[in-house]
Amino acid sequence: MEPIRVVLLPGSVLPAEPAYGALIEALGPDVDAVAKDLELYDGDEPPPGWNLDTEVDGVLREAEARGWETFHLLGYSGGGAASLAFTAKHPQRLLSLTLLEPAWAGSWDWSPAHTRLWKDYEALESLPPDQFMAAFMRLGVKPDVVLPPPPEGGPPPWMAKRPAGIRAFLRDFKIYDLDRARLAAFNRPVFFVLGGLSNPDDYGEVAERLSTVFPDFRLEVFPDRHHFDPRTGSSPTGSARCCGTTGNGRIGSFRARCRLPRKHQVPVYRLIETAP
Image (cartoon, rainbow, N blue to C red; front, side, top):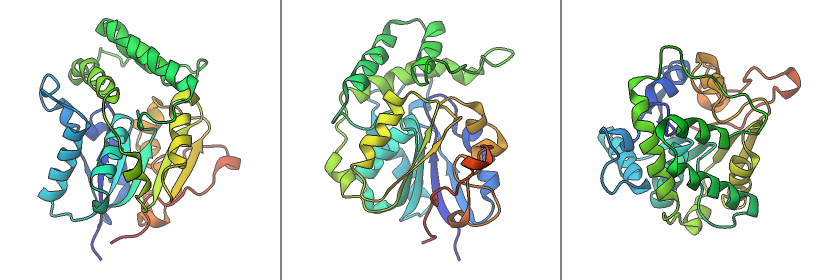
C-alpha cells in the first residue's frame, strides 16, 4: 500500500520545518508528508501582488512536482486560510481537509463581536515592528492568557519577515473572495482543531461558521490550549498529538491525547479518513 500523502501548511509566524518537523517524524514511514513553507516568505519581502491564490498555486505546484493527483491538506492559522482557498479552487484534489484555527474564513455572516475584533486587527497596521507582534498575539487569545515570552538570545533571523507577512495576510483578507458555495460543495471530511483558550470571537466563531458550511465537519476542542501555545506548535509531543497523531500506526487509527486530564482524553476524529 502506498504511503498516505499529506501537505502541511504553517501559519504566518513559524516556518514549516520547526512547525511540523516533530509531527512528520511521529507519523513515520506510512505517511509521505511535506511541510511546505508559505510562498509569502520566499524572499525578503512579500512577492508583488501576493494573495491567497499565490499560496494556492504554490500548493498545486508542490503536488504536481511530486506526482500527487490527490492528497490530504492540513493548514494552521494563515496556512489554514490558504487551505480554505485551495479547497474552494481545487476541491477535486483533496481527500480531506484539516484546519488548525485558520486565521480567516471568508467575509460572510460575521457577528458584531467578530467585526469589532477585525477592526482591532486593522489597527495593528500603524504599529512599529517592535510592538506589532505582541499586539497581534494578544488579539488571538482570551484576556487572561499568559503568552509565552520572547525566545532567549533574541528572535531568529526569519522573524524579521513576519510583520510584513502578517500585514500582507490582513490586507488580503479584506478583499479576497472566498467562495462559500464552493466550500459547501466539498463533501470530503473536514476536521477543525480549536483551542479553548483562544479568542472565541475569532477562532471560535470561525469554527461555528464553517460548521454550517461543510457537510462533513468535525470539531475537537482542547480546553487548555491556545493559538500560540508552544506545546502544540513546537514540542515533539504536542505537535503530533494536537494534530491527531501518536506515531503508533496509520493516521486513520491515531488518537489525540494532548496531555489533557483523563476526563478530556477522548478520541479525536480521524485526521485523515483512509489511504487512497
